[in-house]
Image (tube, rainbow, N blue to C red; front, top):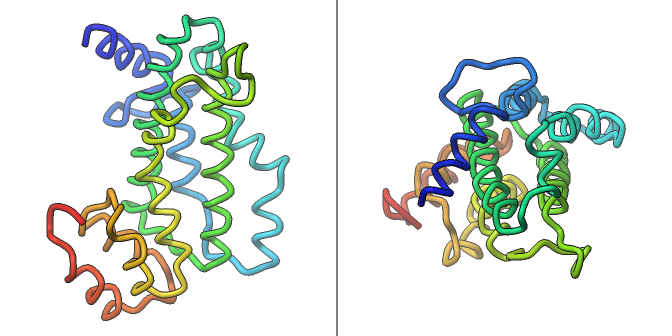
Length: 208
C-alpha cells in the first residue's frame, strides 16, 4: 500500500495528474491533449496521413520517450518498475478515454482504425519498458499489465463494430458499464441513437 501511494505521487510529480493544471513536459497532459485534439473523422486518404509512423512516433510516443520517469524505468527494480507501469497505464488509459468522451470525438471506421493503431503503439511501448533480461520480448507480470489496458481495449473494440448490436458478442466479458458503452457507441458518426439505446437498454446501469 505504501509503495502504491508513493508510485502515484511520483507519477503525479513527473508525468502530471489528471486533475492538475496542464504543465509543459508532463507526458500525461501532453497525451491527453493529443487525443483531445486528434481528428478521427477520417476517410482512407486522411487516414493514410494520420497513421504516418513519423507523426505517431513524434507526437504519441515522443512524450513518453522525453519523460524522465517513464524513459528510465529500466533502471528500477523489476517489481517497482512493474508497479509504476501498472499505475501509469491505468491513469493514462483513463485520461485518454475521458479526452475522447468529454470532447465528443467523432469516429468513422477509418478513425477507429487509427485509434486501434495508436492504442497498440502505446501498449507496446509501455510494456517494453519493463521487459526482463530473461524474457526480452515480454514483461514480467505481462497479464497484469494487459489488464490495466482492458477498458481502453474494449472501447477500441466498440468503435470498430459494424453495428451497435454486434456488442452482444463481447457483452459477457465487458468491463464497461452502461454509460461508458453509450458514450463510446455515440462517438461513431454512423451509429443511430435508436440502435445505441437498444443495446444499452439490455445492460444494468452499473455494469454489463
